[in-house]
Image (cartoon, rainbow over all chains, first blue to last red; front, side):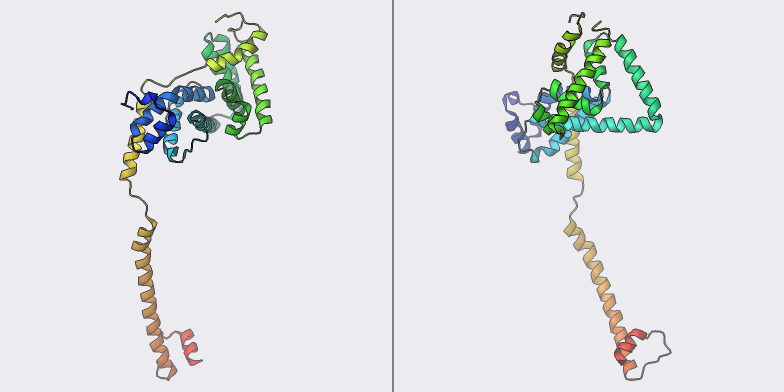
Length: 191
Length: 107
């Protein structure tokens, strides 16, 4: 971890430069700065589970490995979000493959649907409710909602980060908002 | 937060909810990542690096040299036999004479 008390006054670029000069401990400050953003992105994408921490660690390790090639064309936050979204989508694919191996796909969907309905009707915590509502969205739609509505990226930035046309981002966003509204309006929270 | 939202309010509140949504990793997350990174660095420094030219020069070149020498010796031996064959002193009952080489020299 960073032992330097002044490290929090340094800019991202200065911290990266120090890390590249061999002062690896300054990377700890970068982790501290962005861990909340990365955690929120991953949790929104894959749900609140044990995997979140593992994916988060992998995000920062990949960032560390990519530091030498990081040219600062995008901000550190955007770069990390891009890695977080990609690794979350990988984790979801892995999870789906595991589920398909052990449970028939149709059977699994039936269970998942039932679980969300039950949980939403019983949930009283808005954060938990939102997490579950997000999990109900299709992965592609969820990625757009997380990028655009949660992390506040513009449609153009979201399209660039997710490598999608802007029209697709807008249509997914609209579908995502509608589905979230539907799910939340059925819950007790909005009773 | 007020629990009595109506449909219109949900739309307005959704964006705020998502913007304010925040989670965090465990308290020692940063330490764990740094530990993994340090371990990786140590492992990297201990792992023997792959030097293609070094491996190539140590294994492939000596092996190739041995093959070339063996081939050369074999060729010279065949050459001797063929010369004998050419002047009609070779023992053609011996299997050691290469019939193709013999043809070449007699031609």
